[in-house]
Amino acid sequence: MSNPLAAGSLTGTRALVTGSSRGIGADTVRYFAEAGASVVVNYRNKEKRAQQLVEKIAASGGTAFAVGADLTDPESVDAMFATVSERLGGLDVLVMNASGGMESGMAEDYALKLNRDAQVALLTAALPLLQPGSRVVFVTSHQAHFIRTTETMPEYLPVALSKRAGEDALLEMVPQLEAAGVEFVVVSGDMIEGTITATLLERSNPGAISSRKESAGKLYNVAEFAAEVAAAAVDPVPADRTRLVGDTSDFVPVA
View 1: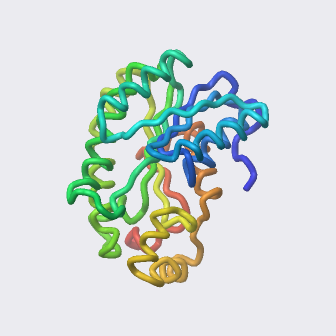
View 2: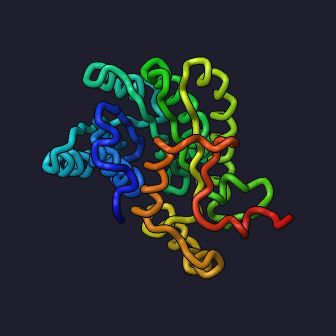
View 3: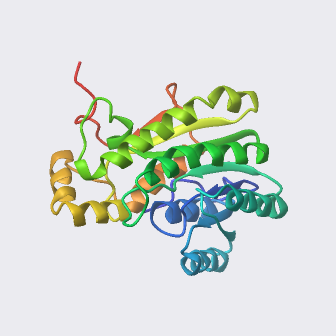
């Protein structure tokens, strides 16, 4: 997948992408770095993978460093932003990509804690570092964004409900963001082939992803969707602050 951002277009830009040691986050970071941004690779427990990504970016002439943080731990988040402040002095782009809720062995309220509470706390903690004219991008799925009007797979329901709750809570912060000169946009896409979420869904409900692909006609892969996320950091913000990626005919009622 070619980079949607022109070489040098983000020179001087400082960007942090949560959950970026792999998958959509990693490709988003790569696109930013190739466009000249100084990037922060955030990980929870995949330190080796995050450091390997940093090394690849550096080998290609980019600027990057990795910072571990458990987004559900306020002290961990504060430590991450202290490092970012020390090394970069602030942020121009924050991509809120990290999410979860289908992992085994987690508490019953983990999805809501991560996908809503931690996202609000993350943005609140990041706000002092975000400069006027900066951009916050929240990554979600059609299954979550449209959960109030379109049913989803039972296995994904806790994630969908908590992601939608997180989106709503973040949208409530928009007046505060606007007062600080910070833009906010939601990027929503269908199930993405090759993500951990798709893998876990397929494991719990064999055939779920292939069935969704057949219904949609096409599912984006990781690199393709990451390109949309990266572009959302620089493209004009839609009037409704939502960038819908791919076909939505199964989610939006036909007038």
